[in-house]
Image 1 (cartoon, helix red, strand yellow):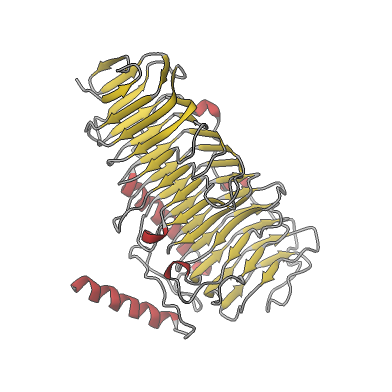
Image 2: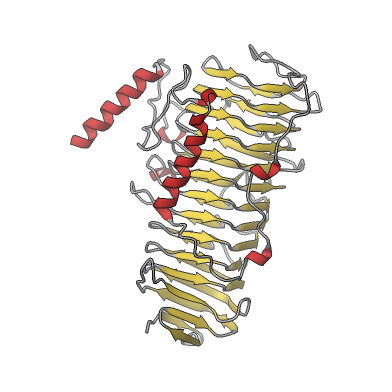
Length: 460
């Protein structure tokens, strides 16, 4: 027999308990304050779920905190109210729930600690201040959090900064690794602010997500060594709808994404950096490989006027850019002498003064399979169904996905990470922030110095 610590307007939650499962009776539970501090195991988790799918509602002032281990909360509809859901402890999971609490400010869901998972949920109809979902990367320990197979829809436009759909980490800990995965999610009509997703942690993977008709971009705001791979941005010319913005950091890989009908905002932005702010260090030692741009109003913007240091030691290679207008492919706002363009393919008429680039190089119709990009179809029928037990947890899944992506990239001779231009930054070892200096350092020598620094610090 297990128990849960709870106080609410009903004093307790009517339920039926067997083994390690609590089934909640049908009903609307108002003003719920629920703390779950039980400890299960990986093979015998504690499950708290609705007895009948779609029949249990938490409303009013709702505060739920999962502080135990190996706890699964499932099949609950959070609606008509406000509150905070805290996923703490470790190896815990929220799955097959629906969130439409919109009477107060966010964040509605806060995720901390290690190996926690949020999957197969629907988040809809939120317009208030603060991120809808936030991940608190609190220290130098990797989090291995997994956010996958969710639908985020109808995040209404806010009045400035602080209206993200997901904010991952904070500036103060952004230079350390989180090594978490955001995968197979759908973001539709997520218009809160220019950062749909704001990444502020190192080593994360954004893989096979779909962004549809959403104002803003997936933004690598702070942090190093982030992978953005096989996402699709189907923006349908929504004003200021973009793709990926790389604002700062080193060792990023932007690989095999598709950008279609972005408008006003460039599909890919590579920012300049500051010489006095370690969190806004210039983009460097990063690769932009095999992405597809289809009829975007502006495809790639390099540099910005906000900060003085141009991006450097970056490779833009084997991208395909197709557009049926004379709008420019590139907007260049900084020095690009350390940006290397190689083997990009264009069916466009206005690429500007980019050396060694060929216009109208596509001799036949370009072929691609849209199903290779973005999330698999996630419908509402996937929500409030039975729990999926797929052993898709934390550090093990991160390691598998990380290796799969890098093996795919490295298997192509065109994408060897030890290229003549941009050195490989070992994805298994945290990459240190580059010094704010205009002094040129050859990649091989730079990597050698970093290894020495890491080795020395480990002895202190």
